[in-house]
Image (cartoon, rainbow, N blue to C red; front, side, top):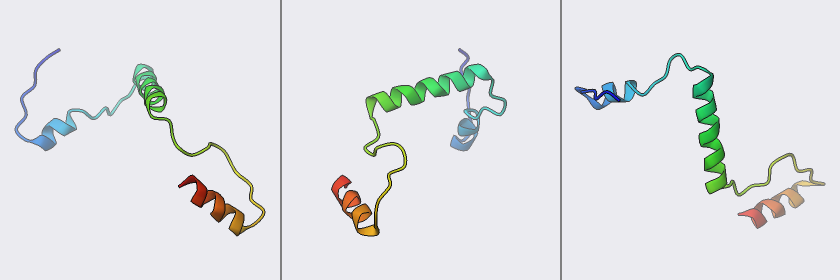
Length: 65
């Protein structure tokens, strides 16, 4: 892996950008998201939750916080 020298932090940050991603790039990103969700799963339940009224939704929201 080559070593690059940068004159500023912004220039180094720009070197990390990928302007032409290929399928391997998307595969790596998907793998990163899978690992992240396994290590730290989201606290909320997935999907749409029907409520009969606003009060029921508010109670559920307070319970989940």
